[in-house]
Structures are given as structure tokens and as C-alpha cells.
Amino acid sequence: MLRVLLSAQASAARLSGLLLLPPVQPCYLGPSKWGDRPPGGGPHAGPVQGLQRLLEQARSPGELLRWLGQNPTKVRPHHYPVALRRLGQLLGSRPQPPPVEQATLQDLSQLIIRNCPSFDIHTIHVCLHLAVLLGFPSDGPLVCALEQERRFRLPPKPPPPLQPVLRGGQRLEAALSCPRFLRYPRQHLIRSLAEARPEELTPHVMVLLAQHLARHRLREPQLLEAIAHFLVVQEAQLNSKVVQKLVLPFGRLNYLPLEQQFMPCLERILAREAGLAPLATVNILMSLCQLRCLPFRALHFVFSPGFINHISGTPHALIVRRYLSLLDTAVELELPGYRGPRLPRRQQVPIFPQPLITDRARCKYSHKDIVAEGLRQLLGEEKYRQDLTVPPGYCTDFLLCVSSSGAVLPVRTQDPFLPYPPRSCLQGQAAPQPTTRDPAQRVVLMLRERWHFCRDGRVLLGSRALRERHLGLMGYQLLPLPFEELESQRGLPQLKSYLRQKLQALGLHWGPEGG
Image (cartoon, rainbow, N blue to C red; front, side, top):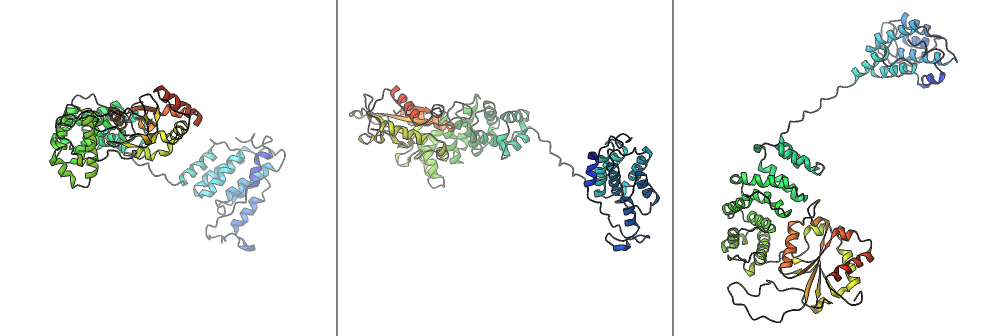
């Protein structure tokens, strides 16, 4: 079996590892009838320690086997690593060790195999290591027996916890509730939704889906259509507080669903629930305002004196008044056929008196500062205004006053605001005589940052599209600055050249750069 490996072909280098192993320390197994003493017992060491010395001083493999076989009552488990280590020393101490009889090695192997069940884990590891170094085959009986005993000594592994089998709706809810949900691809969402049975799609699951799409600006038509269909099918079971959350992504993502019953369904829900949850009612109308789908009947209700008086003493009165002011602006600018009540002037408040929260949160990523510096060097500080809020409460990025000939005028010499409302007469009153028309135009430079769009698309978010639409209807000339164009400019000189080309394309001119 090992005649070739342990004969002349076995080099000293192969077995040198055995010589470097520290001596195996005997384990004290308690007193026996032979009067065994613990290690370090002095000059009167017992038979166990005497046998270890005999093994360490053996002069041949046959002598090793004889000491182990003739003293079965004195042999302890730690003697077998001593014997294997001495065997390696004997084979490695001569340049060409003599062939070892196969019967000797087989008998030594059988002794270890027969007694290895009584070995501790340390002894098993040492014997296994020495057997491999001596060249015993890995599929041989000795190595297999030691390896089997080693596995028996290992602590049992606890069984893996049973994962509950999640169905389509449950899997979708689990994914949406995970804080690291962005790691899930959108196809996972679509597949989970497709596999869910109708009874598994609960309002809670669909609200989680709607909130996720809105929060991460995911304009996924298949998922949005599924929400719209769910809203239509479950109309009778949904209240306005749930509906406001389901409708949120449609307005934010500027997506009008193809579901034909979507708007009729919402009108029925608003008629049924409008007086029960004022804030939810106004939130639904805000989403529909971004989609330019305001129902007249609901507007009649929220602009009624009873509704306005009802919300005046509530904790959310200010936010409701702000939303009602925006709805009144939408009626003024986009619904010329509306003849119902309007928000009284004394109840109106600025819609967005400062930059939106998303812009403030991402100000360090915005191009606003470098564009402002480019305009300052190009036009001068007196010829533009930054972050100016114009009536009825829209914040502009940069505003220029331009004469009828296209000259950029100092803002301090002009009224930067266009009149609001733009119609020259109030409802039910005769039109006054026209006054001298202000010849100056107002040009608004609109930054279109990356986060102003739906993710992976070129569709403006609903709030951004609404602001640009209303500013245009009020008479402001818009000059969009897309983020792709701004990001392609390398340094301030290129940005100034870019802004110059943009302004000149509108027919604008100005004096020497910097004023």
C-alpha cells in the first residue's frame, strides 16, 4: 500500500513537517490499577509515561508496532500520535530509508482504526494530520476512519429556519416593506403583482406600492395601471384617506391612467367622502390638478363657505388653505368655463413661498450656484433676480426683465411681477378701461435638474410641470436649462458661452459683460 511512498521515493523534505511538530503532551485520564500518575510526576513516572518514552526511542517501525501491540492495557489515545510522529522521524532520518513491510503499516493502521473512537478531538486532528503527511491515501481506511470520527465530534448544525411560503400578494408586501427595497429590480415587482390573486391584493399592499412608486419617481405604466384598476374594482370598500395615497403617484409622476373608469370612480368617491376627511379630499384634488382633471362638482364643495369655515379651526388649516389657493389658481388659469364659488381673497396664501423641499435637500448637487455666477459675469448683478417668488406664490430660479427691443434691463428699474390674475376683469364686473401696457417682458430661466424628472425618463414630475404651465399661462417667457446640457459644460467659461447662446437665441442683448 505505501511501500513506494515510504521507500526511497519518500524524501526528507516530504517528512520534515513531522519533525517540526511539537511533542504530543499526554493526557491524564485518571488513576488506574497500574498506578498511573499525571504528567510531570517526577522520577517515579508510571507505566503510561514509560511507554511514551519507549515509543519516542524506538529504532524501527517494527519496534513501534511491538510496543503498541504488546502493552494494550498501558496504551492511551495520546500514544498513537507519538508513534506516528516517531515513524515519520525514522523514515526521514535516513537518505534512503529501507522499505517498510506492508503488514507492519497495515497492523499500525488497524490499531489506530480500532481505538480511534476513544480519541478526543485534539488527538484525532493530530493523527489525521500526521497520517496525511506520511502519505496514507485520502481514500484509505485510516484517513477515512479518522475523518469520520472528526465529523462525529463536530457540534451539530442547527437546521435552517423554515421560510414561509409567500404568495404573490404576501411576497409583494414583504418586498415593499423591506428597508433595502431598492435592491429589488422592478421586474420583481411586476412579477409578484402578476402572480398575486385578486383577494391577495389588499389596500395595504397597494398603498405600499403607490408610495414606493411616488417616493422613488418610478413611472411604471404596468404598475400604475394595476393601482388604477384596483381603485375602480374596490371603490365601495375604500375611504378617502386610502384613496389619497393610491392617487398620489399619478399626480406626482404626471401619469393619467388608461383605465376609463378612473375619473368617474374618483368623482363618486369625492362626492361620498368629501365632508368626512377634508385634508384627504384636498390631497386627491391636488393630484388631479397636476393631471389637469379637476371635477367641477368637487371644486364647488371645497370652495363652499361651509367647507372653508369647517377647516379654519383644524390643525391642518394652513396646509389646506395653501392647497386651496393652488386649486383657485388652477381654476383661474386653466378652467375658464368654471362658474362656481372661488376661494375668497382674504383666505388666499402664497402657494410655494420658497424653493421646494427637494431642491433645498439637494442644493449641493444643484447647478443653481454656478448658473448664478455665470449670469453675474455675463449680465451683471443688477440684471437678474434669483429665487424670486412671483404672485400667486411660485418661486422662480432666475428672472430677467427685457424691453420690447430685447435689451436686458436692470431689475431695480422695473416691476419684476406680472399682474395676477392675468384677466383684466373680475367675474361679474365690467372690464375697466385698459391702462398703459408695460412694455417689459419677463423671462424666467428654469433649472431642470435630474430629480425634477421621473426616474429613467424625460417626463417632468407633476409639480414641476404644473409650475411651468402656470407661469407660462401668466405671461412669463420660460427658458428651460436641462440638466444634460448643464452637466456637459466643463467649467465656468463654457457655461458662460452656453448661457450666452441660450439668451441670444431668444433675441436678447445686453451691454458689456459684467454690466
